[in-house]
Amino acid sequence: MKTKTLKKDKVNIITLGCSKNLVDSEVLSGQLLANDIEVVHESGKKDHNIVIVNTCGFIDKAKEESVNTILDQVELKRKGKLDKVYVTGCLSERYKNNLEEEIPEVDAYFGTMELPNILKQFEADYKAELVGERLLATPKHYAYLKISEGCNRTCAFCAIPLMRGQHVSKPIEQLVKEAEGLVKMGVKEAMLIAQELTYYGLDIYKKRELPKLLHALADIKGLEWIRLHYAYPSKFPLEILDAMKERENICNYLDMPLQHASDNMLKAMRRNITRGEMNELIHKIRETVPGICLRTTLIAGFPGETEKDVEELKDFLKEHRFDRVGIFSYSHEEGTSAYDMADTIPQEEKEARAQEIMEVQQEISFEKNQEKVGKTFKVIVDKKEVGRYLGRTEFDSVEVDNEVILNADKKLTIGEFVNVKITKAYDYDLEGEVE
Image (cartoon, rainbow, N blue to C red; front, side):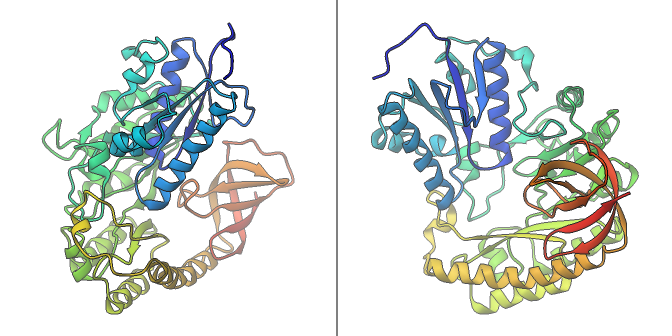
């Protein structure tokens, strides 16, 4: 065992899973720092003596990655390279008892809402006055803004309510203050995230208030891009589109996971919407905000899915020609209503169906990118890799969407906006000259 020294603790936080988890890690970092505890995020230096693993428990692959990461850190502790290993996040919330039994070497497990209890391990106090303040794990020019926690939806495949609880909105004033703080730190793009954006406000204001929040955020000087992630299609508040159209700094971008297009599957998934209603909504969105980038996420291999359902989904993609599409193979999650259904489609078949669907989208994406050649777009410079700059248009979010390869005859600053004339287009990326 490593002998205790008088050396000050240094904490490394490892974040797995989604952007909502990343925000939780940033908030935890801010609280530790405010308590005079040194903290880093996913540091490769190995000069820390404590690790906190913020886990994901969403689907099988994510759970496996989380468990493997915990085991790796426990092994480092066994070798005397770490003093303490703590585990928090969704996997810990959902499987705490199992984890305590199977990996007892972890010093303590915490659920998703136990930040004050984590701080107690460091004899630190939760500082309420820091609400909204955090240590960014992203590059300083963009950040995620979590507007609510939890979800009230009852989608058959989803275990999120089991791990994150019921929907709780943050007040508009609090979010504005948080966004103003981010801008002071250098943030120019705020990506609004929640398990379900369109439900925002129903719990505290008794009505959907996302449009009101958007206007309040759009008033913040220096916030140049506001991006919307994870909007639920059923009872979609169309006023969101009006705000998008009226306010220049709200990106013409909407991430709306539809999950499927076959009425059989939509009903089995408990999505509370039909293909006909989705068709109508998509037409309305594009009619209200011409040129909007629509991103969606789909699931392949849900229990009972037939080849006919897959063909319907492919036809739907060809009909609506989404700008961006992500796809998951169905994961059979205990505690969900779909868990009672027979998961008879083999994993290889699920993945084959996902691949088949993505091949349809790949062609659409290539054609849509070709249409951009010769046009000029406002691009944010994200990073420099292998001697070249990479950026994004307002139609692209971080990590999940297209990048623009920037050809420039001058030095660019990370986080600045430049005008770029597109000269080449690929399946998922663009290339252009900085003007």
